[in-house]
Length: 101
Image 1 (cartoon, rainbow, N blue to C red):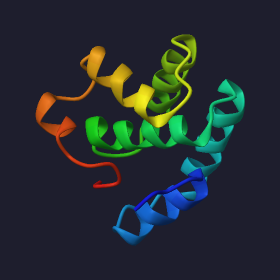
Image 2 (cartoon, one colour):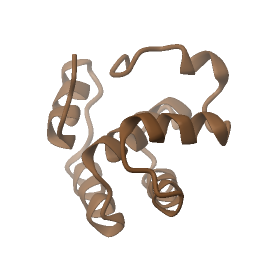
Image 3 (cartoon, rainbow, N blue to C red):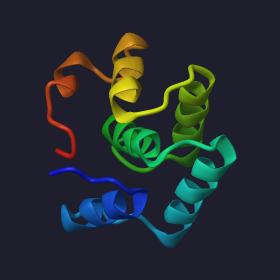
Image 4 (cartoon, helix red, strand yellow):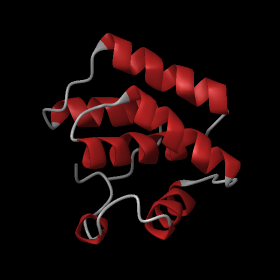
């Protein structure tokens, strides 16, 4: 299943029982606009934040988004490579498919 927009990704998370508050969603879009990041990168940052923090942590999300922005990450593949390279997520979590949260 390919998810293109951040809105679709948030809906997907909700369908899986991961409900973000209105404040979380507003902050997600703030971070997207603040870093001028494409949806794919934002989605990877949300996914990684939830995997590592086990909840949505706004400061973690924005720090990760800023780090990927500084590294010129422009798509989901580059975001996942950046996350692996920086060892942000434990190795066993990398084997899960996209959108498997």
